Amino acid sequence: MKDRGPIHTDWNVQELRSAIDSAGVALWTWIVEHDEFVMDAKGFELWSLSADTVLTFEHVSAQIHPADRDRVRTAFVATRVVEGQFEIDFRILTSTSDVRWISARGQGSNGEPAAEKMTGIFLDVTGRKQAEEGHELLAGEMSHRVKNLLALASGLTSITSRTTETKEEMAKQLTQRLAALGRAHDLVRPLPNGQGSAALLGDLFSVLLAPYDDLGAFAGRIRVAVPRMGIGEKAATSLALVIHELATNSLKYGALSAEQGLLDISGATVEDDVEILWSEQGCADVPKNLTEGYGSKLLQRTVGGHLGGSIAHDWTTGGVVVTLRMRVSDLVH
Picture: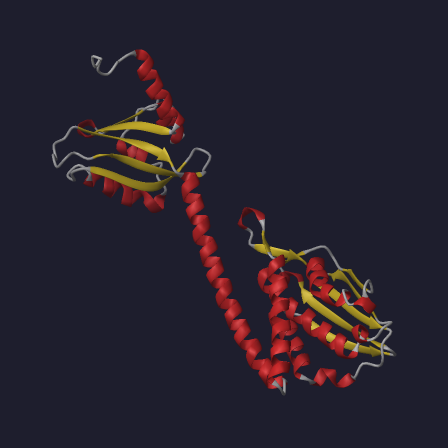
């Protein structure tokens, strides 16, 4: 069959134009001699410029993000004496002050300083850049979390070793504390609009105390009713330690150790603080010297230091009420 060669028709041109539009490609030409910058309709749309605007390279440059402007100008001027293709990514500011990422790709002047014009395309790569930034942010956040957890695990290992007599006891206590931190981190989730991460206060108490409530003789006798509020990652980690230490004491000496024991956690906001009442009833008299041990010191240091609050114990007949008071502003971080 005889080769008919390429067929050039208006239909083919329209199809190519449609393909270019579908890909979000904008065509441009820089007529260097007259400093005239020409773009197609897609280019004007991409740069949020009026289609009847007479453009110069400086006019277009004014739309570029100030942090990228000098870099882009230098790159474009350099292409006049650099052979081959070029590509550069940069940000522009639209008419609504939104930031948009543009990738400029084109052909340089092939080493001819006197070349009259340069041509290329613009691509909107905002989605890709945002995804890259999201991945970088996630990687940085994961690295930060891992470092914090390693430091925290190291500290817990050290203090647990000083308060236990056997390696079996140390392993058990350390595992429980680390498991509490793990459950707390499972609750932390990203907030919208880059506001960080948070967990619900009530969820934190409920999830961390769920293993104790699952004990056959005790099921259903832990009640949690605290204000509905979000707490940040750092506060969630610190509060998880506090809840774990209180639950451990309760399991050893308090309501969680008694068949008829009742643990009631309630709370309310008081001015700029949130006040949590940890109330245990229906158990033998809790030893008052609990406040002298290392666990108590850990509670005092965590609540007073990391959470910017206070903790107080009030022993009653057959129970104890622990009052936690923390600044709301310190819980959101």
